[in-house]
Length: 100
Image (cartoon, rainbow, N blue to C red; front, top):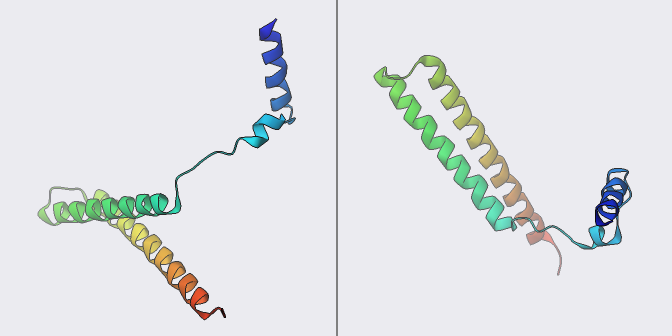
């Protein structure tokens, strides 16, 4: 008997009907500083990996395609970090211009 009730609940959710309890329970994600730290940490790791592959390429220990992939990944990470920095500076300037 319990299985039939749980089957109805999952059928209503899959049909697009949401129970009030499902709407009342918000999901908690990482905080802004945790997310930013994760992005920056990932970018630093990618830059270090790109640098290591570039050095291996200069020494002849890595194939050219691997060097290009590593350097391009490092470039994308650097561009992402610079875009985030620019947005943060822009937001700070916008707040600083607000009248109190």
